[in-house]
Image 1 (cartoon, rainbow, N blue to C red):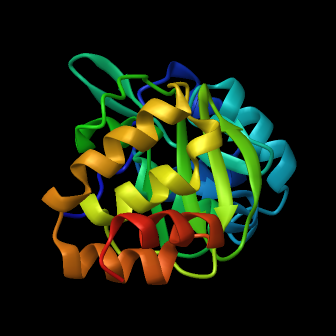
Image 2 (tube, helix red, strand yellow):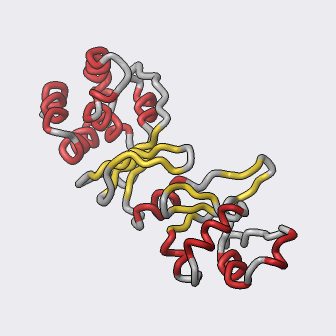
Length: 207
């Protein structure tokens, strides 16, 4: 479905400079834009961005990154995470998830995390977009989608970052490891496990 054009019902529309009005009419509600995207349709991009943000037509997410708000009956919706990250990276090849996903593995973990991990090939570091925090990590390899076996391996890769007691987590993994698909788990260990993680799983698996 084609995104809806942002409606402009402001009484100042008739007095808006023509060039700014033309930029505003190219925007689509719910879409994330980089500064250079709008520079292609603006003859004074920085001034136009300031005016569009001031008027609420755009929201600034970070330096050079903007969002055209989409409305619902509950108010303004946040940008879609997939589109936000893809626009920031200029790439759709990434894996995004929250460390809270480890809680689905039955390891006794229950901590909720307010950041989102983004495994990718381009950017590394913590970035805040609006009130959301994304932890970008450059990885040579990562799967196309989350699986229980990958999450288990990744939890051990990131063991030092978990809020839970590390020894208890390791004991639970050792107890639960036989309940995972063994072929898929061995593949995940081989493809995505760190050296330390592979060493641990060699003790737990028949490898």
